[in-house]
Length: 371
Image (cartoon, rainbow, N blue to C red; front, side, top):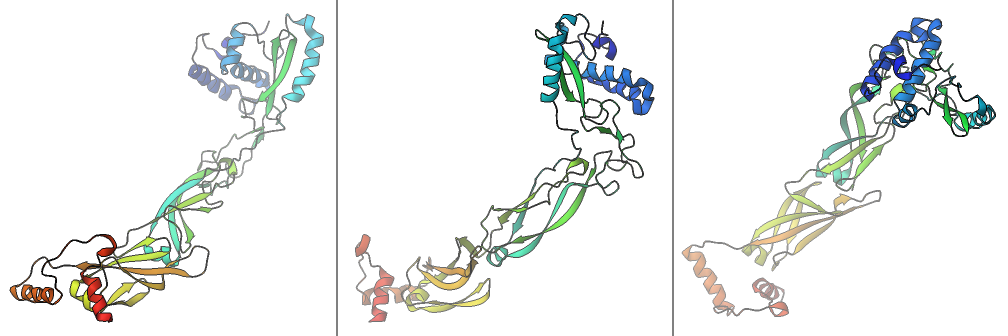
């Protein structure tokens, strides 16, 4: 008769999953052959099999109903020996995991955000980001072991990373394989873990990474830096780093595709008579020529002073949008002069016009200048 799994772990039959886990950890530390000695190997195997069954809700339910026996538990099933041999051969091959599971796993990808000015968007530049992520432990170099020591072969699975379990079914005893609970399926244990990383193989650190921001990049675009993300546990490969580029607002210009748009405010006299305004662009001072009779909303366009085209040659345009300022208060002299101008233009009485008929004051004035 096999020993009761609950008695092996020293827990009640109604013990919770946490109670079972705590009991197993306590006993595994006490009876592991690499710690207590090889004479406790069989005892440790019983503890491992008991935990493997009781920690799995389905296996535990089956065991409570009398369905599972554990390692070597062939008692009472001798009449099914032929079927047992057949299924042991079949399920041993089908349940094989292909060897121990490596400790190293790929690290997670990391996302960080960088805010850049419009100058960077227009011309491109190399920026620097600071991130806090897991990096490979400098003391053990990801091996997880204390310097001068090495992992030991797990005596519970003899380095295979798997243990065999016997289960009963209507067709007989079935031998299956499962990850070794003693070593976690790795085939080795670490008796002396690295003190700096606690056997994780990685530690958290702050580091600076250079990222090339190309000209013309769109706001919110993510740049991928392969292998610059979080270091994986157990010496695993780094994940990727994604840098999301966000554009800072500019006090003068706003971006529209590859163009830069600026709003210029000029007096109505300047719009009517024409003038030249100096605008500080991203390339330096630039003269903006406003033609006589310029209407509100018209644009002065200069090629090659916009944003660099992403992965292409050339740049967009600079577009200076003209906004005409109408005075809100006039002196007596100014009002008199404007009234004289209205009389000269037969505009003392203005009738509302819409659509194409509404040429407007400045349009008519421009026509007079160009005649």
